[in-house]
Amino acid sequence: MNKLWLLGTGTPTPTPERFGTAYVLQLDGEHIMIDCGPAATHKLVKAGLYPTQIAHLVFTHHHFDHNADYPCFLLCRWDQSTGAEKLLHVWGPSPTELITERLIGPEGAFVFDWQARVNHPTSQSVHRNRGGSLPRPEPQVRVTDLQPDQTIEQDGWQMRTAAACHMEPWLLSLAYRFETDEYAIVFAGDTEPCKAVDQLAADADALVVNCWDHQQSMEENGEGPGQTSTVDAARMAADAGVELLVLTHTGIALSKPGSREKAIADIACIYDGRIVFGEELLELNL
Ligand SMILES: [Zn+2]
Image (cartoon, rainbow, N blue to C red; front, side, top):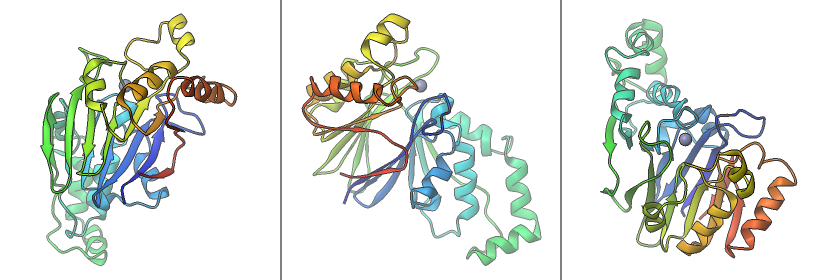
């Protein structure tokens, strides 16, 4: 069965209910993590998953609400590994490779941590008692910078990219379509409505989209460009013909009781499929 865990459904503004963005998609038995926002590793474990289960980590873009937990996830997955796990493959727009190098490479910020764990006898014992063997390997990860309009074939599933429209030219952002023979789900990432993402989402089964605030508020306060409103999200889902729309990256104004219900009602006027207002640690059967 395909599943989606919503780990982070928030924004850069921390609230008790949500903070940052992260998901895990179970597709054809593979666990794919999409974005790694604040506390994603802890939320992953709270959701009943474990870092060593994750075979792929895919970044939509490198705003901190989408990647701040990346060093934590990398180091935790490496620290907990016994050697029996798949090699982690990390994907994302440039500079995913550079960021990774600057975190765990020989000159990286966390080299002092992992060198101590590799060499100190107590850390070696912890590793061996966990099921690992010596000499303790250094962190290893496969990293690939992606471009728009790429198709990556994997065993049993594929991943397609499209250029999202968010914070260019300072940050590159990608939307992703994950697909098997039977199922397709699109993660728009942070974006305003755009043709490339619409085309990527066409005829998919599900669409996960950032939904910052009500249309009218965003038109009035200048927060519209680069982001999606309630009405935009509804139009994107209706045009794509998806059965499931997951609203995520919801701003603090939209997440308030009352405001949330109005958002869902407004969207339901345009889009007649299933609407999920994303709450953290929600597990969806797809
Ligand atoms: Zn962003």
